[in-house]
Amino acid sequence: MAVTHDLLRGPPADAGTVDGHAAASTSSTAGEPINLTRPIPQRRRRVGVRVPRFARRVVGPIALVGIWQLVCSAGVFTSTELASPVAVFDAARQLWDTGSLQSNLLVSLQRVVEGLAVGISVGVILSVLSGLFWIGEDLLDPVVHMARSVPILGLLPLAIIWFGVGELPKIFLIALGTTFPVYLNTYAGIRGVDAKLVEAGQTFGLNRWGMVRKVILPGALPGFLTGLRFALVGCWLIIIVAEEINAQSGIGYLIMQAQTTDRTDIMFVGLAIYAILGLVAEVLVRLLERRLLSWRRGFTGA
Amino acid sequence: MTSVTAALEHEGAFSTRDRAVVVEGIGRSFDGRQVLRDLDLVLAPGEFVALLGRSGTGKSTLLRILGGLDPDYQGEVLVPERRAVVFQESRLIPWQRVLANVVLGLTPEAGGRDGLKQRGLAALNEVGLAEHAGDWPLTLSGGEAQRVALARALVREPQLMLLDEPFGALDALTRIRMHVLLQDLCARHRPAVLLVTHDVDEAILLADRAVVLVDGRITLDTAIALERPRDRGAAGFVEMRNRLLAELGVHDDGVPLSEAAPATS
Image (cartoon, rainbow over all chains, first blue to last red; front, side, top):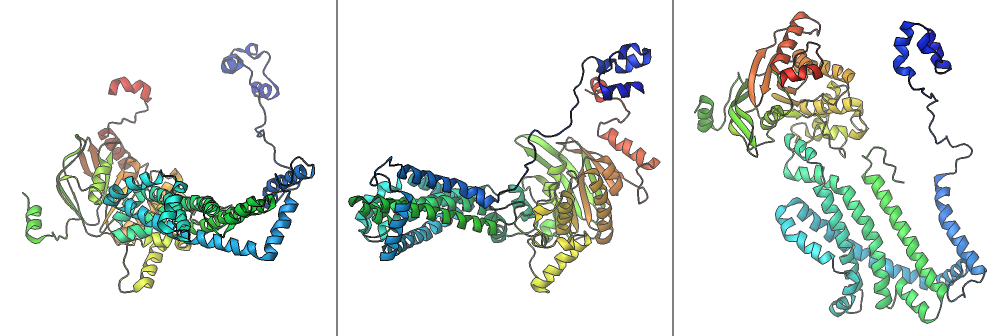
């Protein structure tokens, strides 16, 4: 048909006048011209060399350090106000050579690990009790929510009265601070397990213990891992304050000591270590996720 | 009240060779809304019954009661101890591998763990998915997941299979293949089957008997005496389709709904 040809070239100029038949068949489309284009998305495909993901991700931190160094070299701040990255690196090497960096880091790490072990265990146990049993929820949940709203660091003076000035108050505070995120997220994970899966488990003869072991707890794992993430971040916030106020060792103590001697470089060493530890914790959780949540399709863990 | 109830009260169980399901005068209401009312239904062993009805007529409610998922009914219901359900969604546990899903809830017997694994693999083999035994369920397609769900039901050697629109979420081509597979499996294992569906063709294709549920009551209960394999175009098939559609209140006479609406409402 001639009309078809015309459509490909452009709107028919006189479609209505070819003959009666053609006019009738095109009258509905002839009213408004249609602009035809190729269906190519606006965003073109990237061309050229693909930069590896890792390289792209380190650009930000490197740029930050670079700007930091530039600002310091330009003399915007005095060295007591802001130590340059080079000075911080030197200070770190000095501390390492005297061995005080290692020993203090080890002390802090030990406190954190012990506190986390207690906090995560308690958080998981409580969340399972109140996630699985109505009586557990009724008894525990209100108490946990009340306790959660107490600022943990506000308890530091009380912890010192209760546990003295040794390791216990620090471990207590970390344990307390990490219990709640683990509890809240694991509990949500347990309650969020798809009821349809629980029902399927019932019809296929899973007993209560089998249901908990095979359906509910694995289903709550993503929630638990979210809680773990918060706990790993939170524990460093708590330990630094606890060590600055009440300790004779640890990274927080190192920072506090540096303040009394105006050693800004050492203070930055302490901060950098916290940053690195936070990064390590994040990597650990991601490795754990990749391993435990491998059933999620398309889960890359990166 | 009845012989069945009397036998239950006397023996605590009711053993029979000629019935796989006994439903006597059951009712079920949700928040005062009566979904099932005074319903009777008997399934013979090995009988394939399709339960048809529009949405909300109580098909799934009845199936859930038979599956032991809903204890709050009135009346008497007896089902075999060995029964299995296949839902519209596969409901595979995503963090259990395919084989573990198939043998979910089974306890190792004589053959031990290895014997259980072999049983699971045999069931997977029957649905043609033995090579996916070690996969995660989320990597399967919809049809494959539903075949695993069938294997999970079959491995229990059920005397009653409850199918709740098991192919409703599948594409038309996959559904045809699933029909063939299901017929094949039923011919081999001979469980009694209750298939809940709203697909009239599916019902006629697969079932020995069609039961139509309207407003919680059975309004039609008819044998489908067509030779297998069944041909959708055969006269008997078309006749049965029209009869069932009419019972469901649908008239497939080519009149657009917009024009037919005033007449039906």
